[in-house]
Image (cartoon, rainbow, N blue to C red; front, side):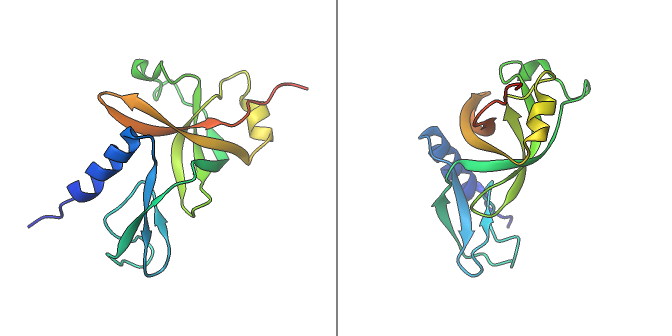
Length: 140
């Protein structure tokens, strides 16, 4: 018998549809897993509970999309970069960050770490999470 991830995946997407970003917190060691996982990556415990994420974070690294990663289906998200986001709940994740383009990438990079926030967007019939800059840096 395989692992039934539906009990994790379905509630997660249901909550996204309601405007909530949820994660799983280990009741043994306190590590937070987002996106949510069946068990704890830190201690291996299967004892997890749902928590609501703050929606805040800081981008600590960034890279611009290369021609090979630019896809027409991402045009509605433009402009964006890829970034490493540290979340106050604990995990660091790789994610898309909207608001960064060729014109402001150097300004954004000079301000790292920079505040970002989660945004729930519809994609291909389901909701997903990306990040946006809290404030887009302007030239001084």
